[in-house]
Length: 338
Image (tube, rainbow, N blue to C red):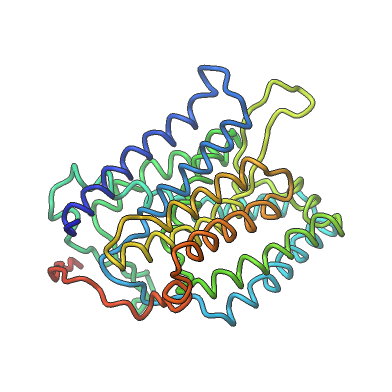
C-alpha cells in the first residue's frame, strides 16, 4: 500500500471513529444504553482512534526506557499514597478545588489538541502555519508559540472545561476524559515491546496490590473529583454510574498503538495491531475491578500467541521505534509573527 493511500485510510478511520465515540458519549442522553456495552464500545473505539492518531511520519524523539518503565509503578504508588494522605488530613473540598483548577487548564490543552486536526481542515492555510509568539509580561525570556487554528480549537475546550468546573456533569467529565485518553495514546511512546511488557507487568502488580491489599485506591477514587475516569449512567439509583479509569484505557492503549506502528514500519497490513486490539477487547469484556488484572494478560497473551504462531518473535522483540528510519516527507516551513 502506498504511503498516500495509507495516510488517507488512517484519516478516514480516525474521522469515522471520532464520530462513533461522540455518538456513544451522547447516546445515554436520548436512549437507554446498556452501561456495560457502552463501557466496552467507548473504551475500544477510544483506543482505536488514539492508535491511528499515533502513526506519525517521523519516529518519536523521545521514548520510554526500560528503567523508566520499572520506576513507573513506584512513582505511581508514591503519587497515589500522597493523594490518599492529602484527602485524609486536608479538606476534601480544598484538595478538589485545587485539582479542578489544574484539570481546567490541562483539559483545555488536551481537548484543543484532540479537536485541532478536524478543525484545521476548514481554516485558511496561513491560520494553520503562521506561528504567533507571545511573551510573558515582565518575563520577556518566557514565550509561548501558537497558531490561530489552536486558538479556534481552544474555544470548545474552554466551554467544556467551564461546564465541568461549574456542574461536574458526567458528559463534560467524559468529553475531557476521552481527550486525555486519546492524547495519551497518541503522544506517549514505549519505544519497544520489551519496555511495554515491563510497564504492563509492573502496573499489573500495582493495580492488584493497591486494590486488593489496601483501601488506598478505592478511597482516592471515591474522593478524587476530577475527570480521571469515564462515567456511564445506569438505571440503578443505588449505583447511578458504571466507571472505567482512564489508566485502563491509556496504559494498554499505548502498547496496542506500538503494535500498529510496528506493522506500519514494516509496510504491512495491521496484523499484530489486530491481535493486540482483540486482546484488549477480550480483556475488557472479562473485566471487573481492577481492570488491568484482566486486560494486561489478555493484550500481551494475544500478541505473543500471534507472533509465536507466525515465527516472528525475534523481529518483534528487537523492534526499537527510536531507531526506525522515517519515510521521506516534504519539509514544511512556518512563518513566525510576534
